[in-house]
Image (cartoon, rainbow, N blue to C red):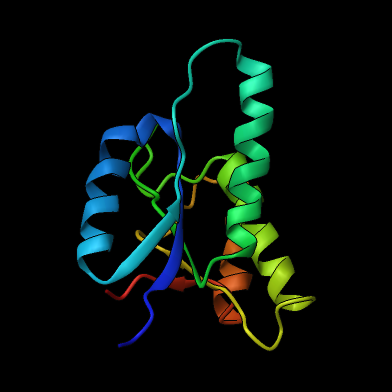
Length: 135
């Protein structure tokens, strides 16, 4: 029996409904979704600190990081600062400690020209470090 690939979803919490839909879709597609953005109750900063740490730790354990970049703020394929940081983190792991077993970093939709870091995303895609989702 083939072991399921471990996958982390990176997305804006504004997409919580879509995250749930994609969690199901990805699990049905044979992935083990080990981490995704979660809403939390109570004090923001203590919970944010825990979620932030857990999310990045799970990324290090993943075979795939899936960027769920949908429309936000009137921009198709939106990637905010937090998700950009997550992409950079996964790519950084691949360039250092995960060279022999790289994390596949995939994005769902094309990158919009309006993003201030669009050029960097394009460089990473041109280098093959960030690829379109093909499932």
